[in-house]
Length: 360
Image 1 (cartoon, rainbow, N blue to C red):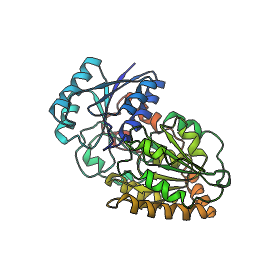
Image 2 (image 1 turned 30 degrees about the vertical axis):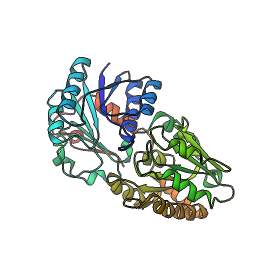
Image 3 (image 1 turned 180 degrees about the vertical axis):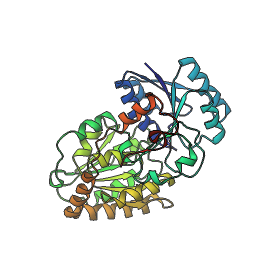
Image 4 (image 1 turned 60 degrees about the vertical axis):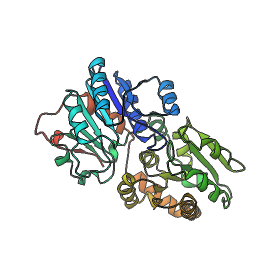
């Protein structure tokens, strides 16, 4: 049994996506007989509860994030737990931190969404964006195993199971799903729900999924009413997505889940790191994208609702989007592939597998 350290943070400001995609891989690691240990400088009560309920150990370490004390605590934890590898997920780990972590001797897997040329000092790199293979990872992480493309989207077990069920057609999907991640840093959920509720189409059930780390969760829950439901920390996300004829979603990690379940989606860019992947996904035809950056929540919500309602009214377009998602032939096994790559034998230097492993 290998011990894998997961170094990722969560907060209302940065969201919970880093931890949640690592959780998907942690599930796969445990299924393979390994142990995943989460370490965070910053977390939220909701994330801590989720990790505990799922049976994963999690510890708090010294900060600030990405500084010397963080690095020292992470390396110490690796030694104490005899960790064979570490997954590093976050945007606040600078080059000195990354180099120092790799020097500790354990294999390092780096999650990356930007491909901006910054050295990653990693043995494995994961980027599930459609065009990730075009990014300069050979220079950013020389010799690393590159796990690139939607085939490496890390989906939680509940979503993988939902993907195995028979897919419903658009006419059988009455839910308009709204989700802006675990904490919704821009505060869009409430305004979008209010804008949609004013013009809710007949036969359409609007369901908002709100993370427990969202500081406005109680306020959003108060909007529930006729034809509009709000669920906090929904335990049946996969099944709900499978019933959705349209999703309005932040352009983060939920993208892979929606794609594998062939859900027509309006992706909302809420942060810079989401822009490229959202644009790439829209080009593939299963989604459309709208940019909410730099706008007030009420203004952005009006634009988002208008686009969403127009898509809902065009069932033929949504069927074409569903068909485009189905043509991607995603199997939802990205987390399993990542777990296998992390714990399996390192490819020989210079081999094709070590240079690049890209799945469409």
